[in-house]
Length: 171
Image (cartoon, rainbow, N blue to C red):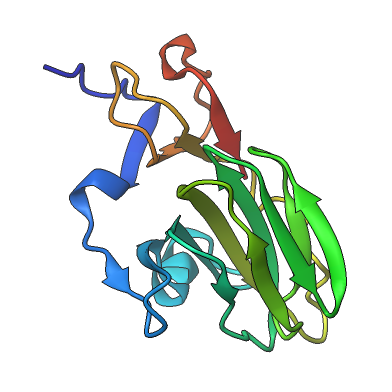
């Protein structure tokens, strides 16, 4: 039995409790943790954003997302992306930031793994994100006593961090 999160943290979404949507190309699936619409409620006054977890099963083209900045971070394996013809070796846990309109292909995938995708609206007045939205969101990367891996939490205003989380991505 898991310990409920402390009052300083709010659970936003959990990969384990969300439905996966298969890709049209059959190369994987995606679980959306935060939609563009929900992000507007979570972070009013900021550019809208989307957070999803992709299950990568084989090399394939990415869907183009014009008007978005993308931060792609593999979890559980290294991958190689080709972005507008340029090769990018991306280590597990490392971010790769690129324009959503770029022609992007996952060209090497040694074994199936997951990827965290943060997409932030771009356009006039919306600079490329520096891996963040507002710094209060945490994504667990391992099972912890607060929840299964890939659980999205948010720190409540003025709250102190909690050491029971283990490795997390903060954005």
